[in-house]
Image 1 (tube, rainbow, N blue to C red):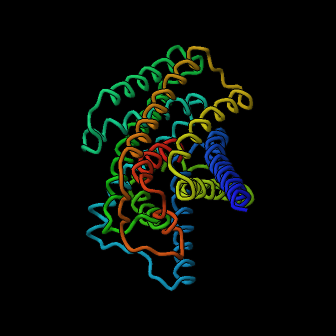
Image 2: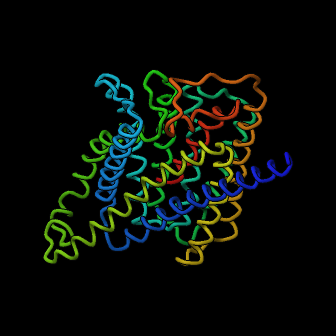
Length: 366
């Protein structure tokens, strides 16, 4: 009877993990191809990003209201001092990361975007060393060299290389290193109470909007004001179609962030890390098959070299966390009523892994 129960439990966990991985794949791969598809006819990536931020904020606010009504427990509300001093730098870096990533789709193919964005881990490592979140070790130097070498190989003499698009996505990866280093510092501030992803997204979106708006006003404001698809529309049906398409993208963006945290909370960040590596490969295969992106053997070898560096880093993090003994204390009050419990109630040694999993995977998508 005990073995039968154990077998059913194991099968249930496997099926649950596969379901959550597929959910993550749908949102992550979906928003990548959505952005590329939309940029072919709608050349306002910063405006698109601003609308996505509004949709994410509205869904986050609605989720907070529903959680508060169901559980009769007030949600976290930061003071203005904490909001501007601690959240603002993270929000600004996040806005630039997402905005430049979406902007690059005007010039770059999905395959080159996917390969270049994988280098975000390189910049995360660099800034983790600068902010002393990581210690300089020989293994980290090897990881940096593998990722940097792979980045050079899969962009060298690429048949569909575009300098402007490559600069945008590489700049997004660089800012992503700052973004996720600041995010790790922000989430480690237990007194802020932003461990719940809904609360984090809710507080980040307004400042992200304000941080990205000046860039939108300079580069897209005039063109958008004279565009017949938005402000100078003549057919209301076309306008509603464009807004509906943009709203759908906002739903994908919200689902991506939430599915990542949900996968981590119900499994582990190591599962998310491994799933993300296969996701990158799936994205490249789909781009080559559906969009006709051309990927040479040298590009594939460079991408494999980059993934080997990422895999080595994930493995080292997993080994380091398993080598630590004793459970780690939970941060903040424990509740059994919502996702907050799921994010905190995990096996000993998983929390250190989680930081890297969150940093890596959100950097890969939006």
